[in-house]
Length: 219
Image 1 (cartoon, rainbow, N blue to C red):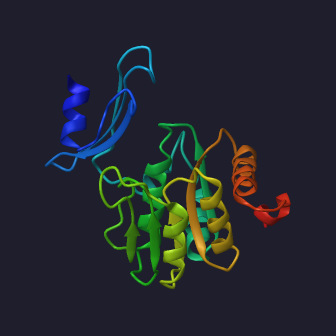
Image 2 (image 1 turned 90 degrees about the vertical axis):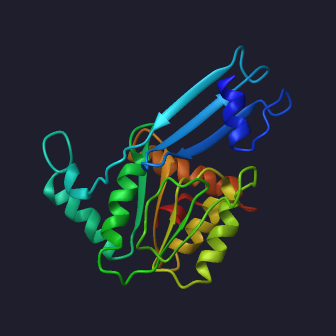
């Protein structure tokens, strides 16, 4: 009953032909919830996963200290953003990739002069100071990350930020943008730095019409 009520509220269809749904909900107090559900035949029984996002802002300075980053590591990230380098944030689901991305975006927008464009399918990244965002316009509309990146490049951005790289064509457009001197940032599902680079390479290979050398991506 809960699943169908959420689907109805979000104007999504949930049937045996479309047995999976994903929705983001923002409460009046600003709290954000991610709702994932499936029904048979996608799952043996109805499954629900609810993810609550942090309500307070997390800044890069909050990562400093025992168990977190050193001062030098934080400064290296700030320098990378200032010099328009590419930052890949890797980890598993729920590791805080979007939280760290938001913290870095706050650093990127601190001087008000950088033109940062964000392409994401759902509103996970907070950036009231940024130039523009491109996301899914309405529920049930497919979001084309590749097209969004192409549009961003026509707006003379300093940085192109993608909420999460999931497809080959989007990865190809990202790497093309980054190789032309535009800074960038994205998240990937990977357990280590090395695996993150191979994951990016695999996505670029998947989206390319010809063979790509690893050095093309790593450069």
